[in-house]
Image (cartoon, rainbow, N blue to C red; front, top):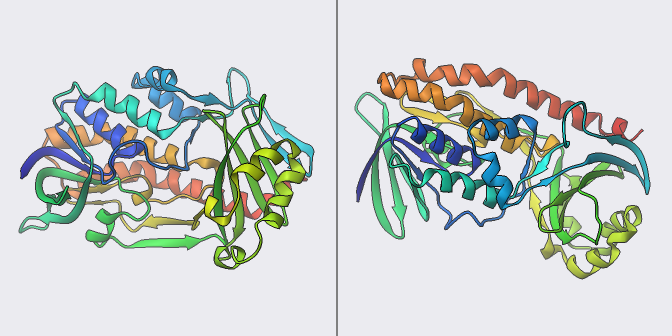
Length: 361
């Protein structure tokens, strides 16, 4: 099968899908390929900040997302044992200190708003296998596999929006600097007790952070920071001592914890690292989101950075396509616009991690 589009986006997550929607609205024919079967896959980064909320409102997407279901955080609390030592509440005219948006709701809303646009196309169950280049080295599309069938997609520009382990980045042989942070994160979800306030709660346990994020659907997502690489050793022992500090700080969760966290198999371990690519742009190729700059879970900013990438890139790429200026020197405007902010945010993440204990003083 041979397909053609102005832009081929590899990765149908929040950044890739938003970019596809914005390009299609601008009249740029866009094809997104996504390896999963649909939008109902597991995500961990689902909290958006005020800036992302404003971006979604600007593009008239937020109302539909809100209809599908969101949860606004009333505050952020820091605990020492059972005692609240610090509380962050909305400032000035703000209504919340962050919003939980299930990515299935986010993606569904964007796709619904896009599917009647003839310039927008999304293929699920499709995995990129090869990047296509012409004799001058320009990237001119991809070879992909959909349900066992090879597909050739010709495009003026290829976008790698395929996450921290980006296949596009690897195939393009774009060098990246990876930084470890001395910790990994164990994630789990449990049902919230009745009247559990939509709040983000933080606890310091043996020098490591334990975080509880309220979610839509009456759930709590819990993240334990653990020493880097320690999970294989940790899971050889009993789960009970690990759960102790959680129950001690929040005794109202004891029943839910004991019913839902029965073994180490109820946890998912995320290896924490950040990275920045040597370049995000080559002739006919652009990396965005985690593919270009992986963020750590600190501050829950990863999804927000990726969606801002899409927001900033869309008008730049639209102009480049219509003017047929897809050389790296023209596309580089996007990277120049975003790189310093991303670098600053990564530095701030490290600072927050190294001064963690001060938040609980």
